[in-house]
Image (tube, rainbow, N blue to C red; front, top):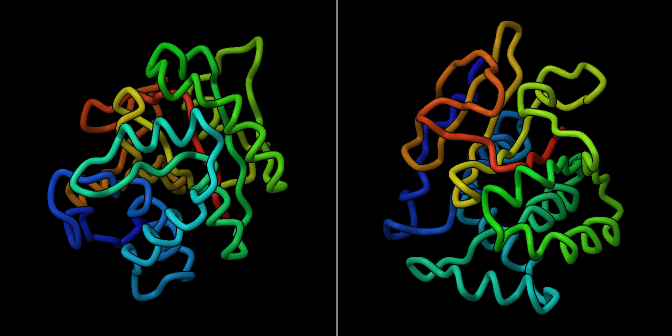
Length: 201
């Protein structure tokens, strides 16, 4: 069944803003009954607390990406915060796709890798292979039904949920939920996967 999460990231911050990763994660937490009622503002602040003390290149990227007074959420920070809430989290990375999508994001991923590993979170970097998002979503050996997915050339996060027949995408930009069938790296609303997906259970 869909997320039943109809909030949009403009709910508590001026538009535009960088709250998409937090709303995407909060939609998943709501679906898993961790945040019921939803707490996107708390999720945003929780992730930002986790981001204190970043490595230099990561901090520079975060500082350079402020929009509407809000900071981006790095993949490691989303995964670490979910882990702190007692969730299982794993980060899946297609490095060639990430480099092609956003070289700035790709340049900080060595620091991200260290941070993810130091926080005892699983990281699967598909070095030497080039899986699509469809491959990851449909792989029954990947035991996650919820994913925070990087799209839009590394500029936006959405939430994706496995359904019995297909998938649902929650888009924090407008609060819309869309049922879809996996199709390579393509998602609804003309979004294209940017090489990072975070499994959350």
